[in-house]
Image 1 (tube, rainbow, N blue to C red):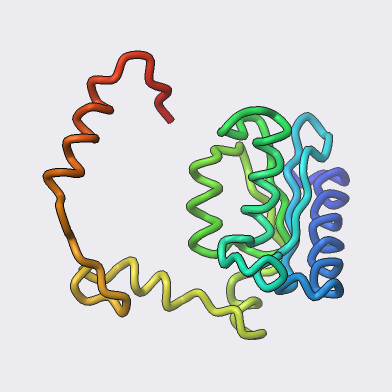
Image 2 (image 1 turned 30 degrees about the vertical axis):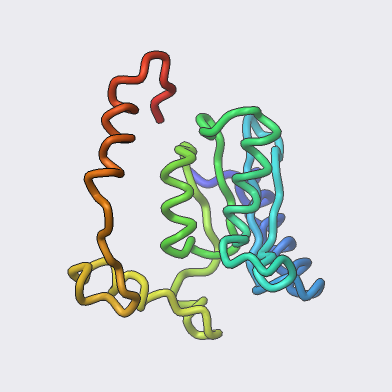
Length: 159
């Protein structure tokens, strides 16, 4: 059930999308992280202003929320975002493990203004050797030595 509070929070994410756009920080995307009815973190797209292709609104807000809460997971948090998350943000959201995500615009709305992520979904479905970016497996066995050490590591923090 969508509440008046949910509408307030999604509107804040939309406001942030316009704020970032007007600041020439990046594209028109905003996001917030809420816990127990309180905004923990806010973010807007900062890709072009920070020269960071990962500085999408959701990632910025997730990083800030994790820092503020001193944790790497956002249990019991809700993310409100001005647009349906792209594949990268979707991955970050799943790793952060919030309990819900509310979004305003759809990925189809984003594609209409030039933010079309469909090619990434297509790439994920391809065999690795058929992708547009070349992926080369190198020194797998040497890398697996560290993985084996991780598997045996006492006191490790799983996530």
